Amino acid sequence: MKKQPGKFENGISFIVSLLIAFPICAVIWVSMKIVWPVLRFCAKAARNLLRKAMTKSNVVKPTSQLPTPEVFKGAPNLARARSIRF
Image (cartoon, rainbow, N blue to C red; front, side, top):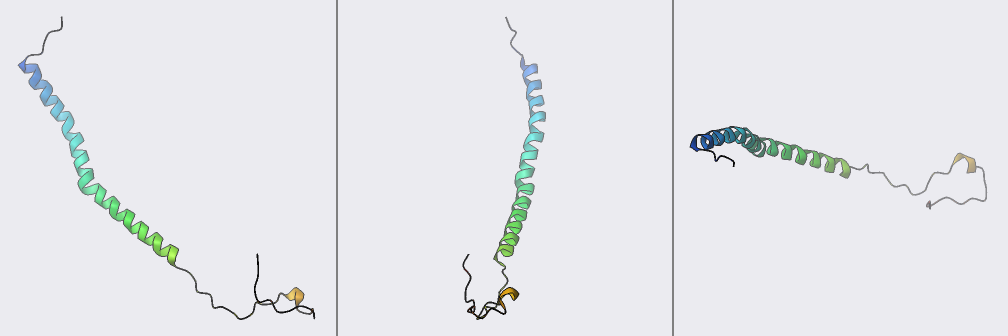
């Protein structure tokens, strides 16, 4: 039969488990209190920068008529192009 651990072995196992669990809990606590807010701030800043980059657009001044290509300049039977359909 297996021998049951005594009070001394229980105390030693408690101390060893405490020493192993403390660094793990410390890493989790540090990441929750320090690293996570920094990462969240960086993500928000990147999102805002991307949003600004996506909303910037160059304003093009509309023209009344489209320019005629050089190939068609001398053709007498062509009307001015007012729109292009693709």
